[in-house]
Image (cartoon, rainbow, N blue to C red; front, side, top):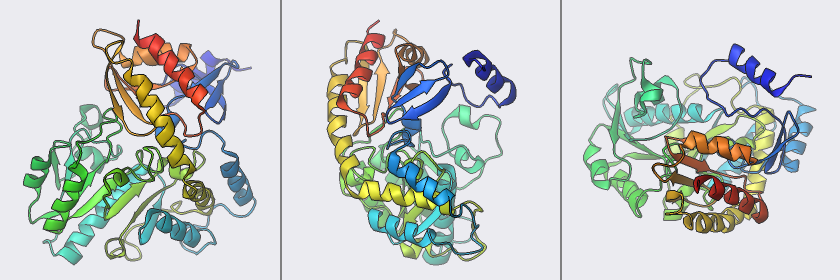
Length: 400
């Protein structure tokens, strides 16, 4: 029988060291709980960075995957299949959009949106070819492909990966004046996260997103919302932009769209914009495959009931109220929306990594981001009792 130490040694010997995982080897998961190789159970307070909004092995999602596995899993886009059109139509209806471009990973969705925005800028807006610019926010996280890290302000993501893709203007997140000043007649789009996840669950000032929408309208610029982490009920609404009653021209979706079973992402938005793509200009062998679409259609059905948005709202209010009680008693700041929080440990206390390790010792899996910040994102199926169990563990750790 392979031990935990042996599994970890295999990973460290044969897999690239582009992650720094905690020394926990998970073998099973159900709902908000996972079990390691030694039979110890842990409460999942990370949800695979919001990919597991519906918990581990949600029965409806597992059933959809098993049913589709017995029929067909891949055709490529060389042919039609009986899940793609239904998936696209149902996702467009759910999100109030007009067209869907299915892909696999979140980074692929962002790359696709950037390509579409540039093509739209040249063919519809009339910007001279090769000169379009896209305005982005500092401290962003949209993925780690070469083009995306070209406009990252995280040196860990950028260092020694150049030369970088040109055509991006970086401004401070939440600074409406800086955003206004950055828009020129060459601007094709503004790309923003409605809540910055990797930066520490940063919520922008009230009115910032609505102001970005107005600026884009005034200048004939596309607004692209990266809802890969913030979307699909995580913040208490279907899309995080809904909190400010703002609509984007394009949204990037991913993570929870595949139900924690299949990699599945999409760009959704206006037909006038996504319609610029013609055959051969963009694609993916696995994008929109039958298995992913079948799972995605079941995710859409779960979200259409509103149950998970309601759970995120109610449990999120409880989470933030209890974490707020720890400010000045182990925590310096608490941020977030819905069942999603970034908490800064009081300076002089544990680092985020040390706190994550201590929480794992207490049976709660969480992960640091940027020094002394913990990112908390339990599955939306979690019970209030289990949520309290996790918060109690956080309180014990940060009060040291």
